[in-house]
Structure formats: structure tokens, C-alpha cells
Length: 348
Image (tube, rainbow, N blue to C red; front, side, top):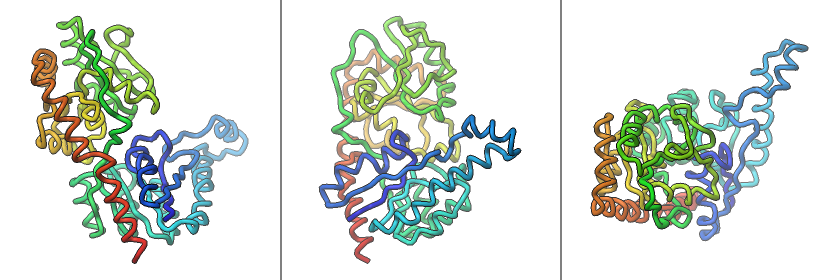
């Protein structure tokens, strides 16, 4: 079976978690997934040349960008015929439904965020209605999807446990860690007061942020507050530098749709978590003792202190976290489920 995987990019977290990490596993089931992404990507800004051209043509740089995006996606309409089905992560082009309407091959629409709040609710609903099958990242997302398409299945955002696994901890420092993209930097403000308070009290502690660029919320000194650039090759090594992993969130309609991917990354590396008890985070916390929930500064501070001082509790959370990921949130567990759905879909 040949599957066309439509993704946002090779380093995009959703693309990596939802489609790319399954490729080698699905080959065991004779399913070949070819990823396809577009340039410029969906949320790109106009290129400098578009502004220069605007001075001559008076055509908006954003109009040029929209034309670029549209043209780059047109070959997809012919390429689709080389495949048995299309595995589509989110909308092909947010706020435009032209391409989804022109696809005739069966579509598995896959999403892991409350995308209807930001990518155009009408277009998202239309994409769901046209899909042969929907993979939703959690129950909250599935509740929305099933209103528009009864063929909806919950496929969590899971971890390749051969790529993320525990390494020996750095016992010199108690390292509070966070990994994520710049789109989530705003959540770091929620935990900043507690982190700085904790660092001032514990001089053998530090904060490590891993991302594509430095978040503005912290002043990095490369000693107590450290930034390291993310790369796929070093991701396991970087997360293993953490003693605990953070996932602060606001509580709103969008965050309730998040699939707790960074929380699961920490757990896969046997790192206890301290997270906002929002949406899927709460569900995971209730399955096993893997860490602590925190709502305000006092909660965060207490959680850091407990995990630093109580060695037995720390070890319990670390062991439980790894085991829970292996048992319930691993690629190994879910690739046969995906393969079965693909086989059933193409057999119709």
C-alpha cells in the first residue's frame, strides 16, 4: 500500500509525532508512507523580494505570498493518483478549502490540536465531513470531530520509545526543564515566578530551555538559566539533561485540545513531570503516579521542592512515567492500529 502523508514540515512537532515517526514501523506492514510538505509553509511571512516588488507593482506582499502557497500545492492534485490513500495532518492550506475539495483519493484527516479555533472552523468542518476516516489526538478533539464524521478514532500523540529513552541523570544539578516551540513561549510566563523563586533558594538547581530560539521570558546566563538549541538528533540527550519536565498551560478551549506530547516526552525519558492539570494532562496524571499537577506559584514551588527532596517519590514517578508511555502511549502499540484502519479503508 502506498500512502501520501501531507505534513507541515520535517521538523514540525505535529508532523513528526502524528505521521513521520510511524514510517519505518508501517513498512513492517507493507505500508509505504511518502511525506509531502510545501514551501512556503502555511504560516510563512512574505519574502523580502515581495516587498521590493510591491514598490514597482503596488501588489501586496501578502498577495504574492498567497499566490506562492497556492501554486506550490497544485501538483498535489495530480500526485494523489499515485497513492492508495492520503494521510493528511491538519488543513493543506488554512482558511482555504480548494485543495481538499479537489482530492478524490480516500483521506484520513489527522489532527492533534483544537485547530477549528485558529485555522477556520468552516474549513475544518468541511475537511472532516469529506474525510473517509478521522484520527483525533484525544477524547476532547474526538468529541468535536464525531459531530461531523462518525468515522472518528482516537489515536493519541505517542512516543517512539526507541528514540526517547532514559540515560543516566546529571546528579550535579537539579535541572528544571522545558522543551517546545516558540508558539508555546507564552505559557512559560505562568511558571516563571515559581522557577526564579526556587532557583534563588536552591543554588544546586538550574533551568534549561530547549527550543529553536530563546524565549523572551527569561534572562539567560548559561549557568543557572540555560538555553540549548533543539535538534532531532540531540533531542533524547537534551531531555535527559532534565531532572523534571514542565508543561504549563492556560486553561481554555484551545489548550484543552492539546495532546500532552511534551509531557509524554519527559515520561519516556523517565523524568517526573510537573504540569498544569488541563485537558489531556489531567487524564494522564490520573492513570499513574508520574508527577504533580500545579495551578499557581505555590503549587509549582511545592512540586519542585518535593521532587528534589523526596528521592523515593522521584524514583516512583520516573519509573511509572516510562512504563506508562511504553504500555499506553508508544508507536509500538499504535502502529498496528493505524495499519489495520488503513487496510480496512482501502479494502472498501
